[in-house]
Image 1: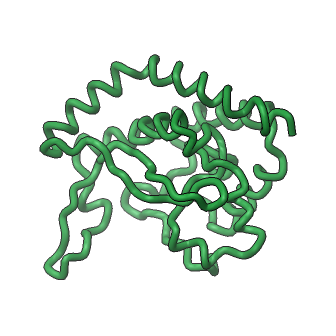
Image 2: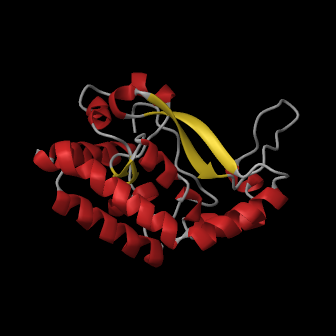
Length: 202
């Protein structure tokens, strides 16, 4: 309880600052590459629900084009991702700008991943509890399968995290995240077969 109320936020700020400093060469390089590739558009912004469903704009590196079909509908992700974007995603570097969200107080390093506002009416009362804490760059669901598990299982992991937030739990998730990124585990659907949208039944 004391960790969640008094210490989690300062630790988030400290680690986010140190990580941004450590990865600043990559941040600058990716910004330069995307600035040229995307004709000046480096970042992708999308409104997401945060703690207590408060809206905020998540920040990611823009790894896809905005190409649409004849009806004006965006093409599938795997048809819009750029060559540089594909590499950035495989290295999970597209998430790096979310450290800015952490510094702003929109997100935490660890917590349930921020999804879409359109999903909120589809949640059960229990699943809505995922908004009792700040959303995270990584979370308990991400280190337990990410895109390789069902939505139902993801939400079970999210609620388990909400009920058991602690310093030890956060450090465990952060260390497992680093391990999973290097091992490329749990993301077998991320390129050609993306995770299906949540429809309330999966």
